[in-house]
Amino acid sequence: MNWKRYGIVLVVLLMAGFGNGMVFSDEGPEEGLPGQIVRDAKPAPPPSILDDNIPAKVTPTQETVRANRFELMDSKGKPRAVFGMTPDDEPRLALADRVGKVQAMLSIEPVPGDLDGIPTLRLFDKAGKMRTDIKLTRDGNPVTVLRNKNGGHIASLSGVPVDDGGTEWLLSDENGQVRVALSINHAGTNLMFLDQNTKVRARLGLKPDGTPDFIYTDGAGKERALIETPKAKKAGR
Image (tube, rainbow, N blue to C red; front, side, top):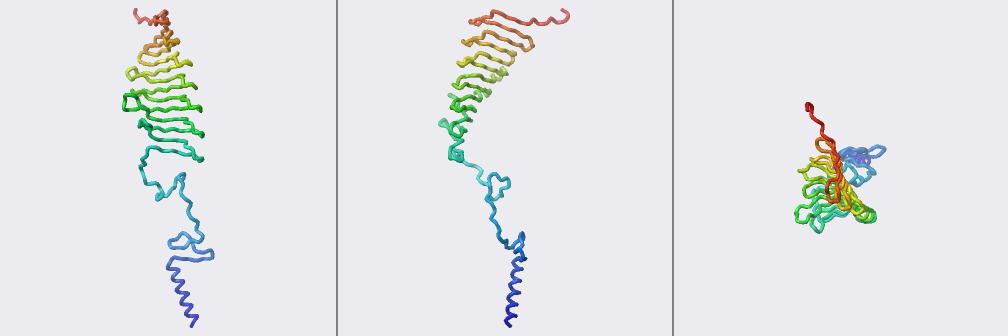
């Protein structure tokens, strides 16, 4: 009778195993079906921000972060980027090199007497000197300024007021004095040469109708020579 009892127990165990969804083979339980036991299952690797296939359940759910200052650190614990508010209560983003010197800065710079600041992008050399300055004026006109290693003005490209509707190139000497100016506006195209006192001494221009002229002036600004192409006579005269 004992073998019958053992047989009944074995049948019950097998039926329970099938009821729980367990299917055994020579290689162990089969994988991939609900309710089955997976042998030697390895834990899933942790998600990475570099992985485009991050499960939805581990994606950040917070949409807004409020703070006055953020710092981005490198692997050695040195700050490489700082985003925060200035003492003037304006936002500023500064990017630094590996030794901590600021190389680029994007900010809203305050304007004395004006509640609205102006957007400004500044680039610095290894010595911390500003070499390039890109910004907008109060009227919204773009200005790009190039500087030498001492911070002096080398050249600039600027937009003139909308009423004039043009642009202007300015080239300066080692002292920051403008010596060459190229302007394009409603009055035509003009290339001007200035002396050390910023007086225009020569001007080569092209009028809106295409007529060229060349003017020399003295130190007082009086014209001493004028070379102009005469206008063509109309037919029938």
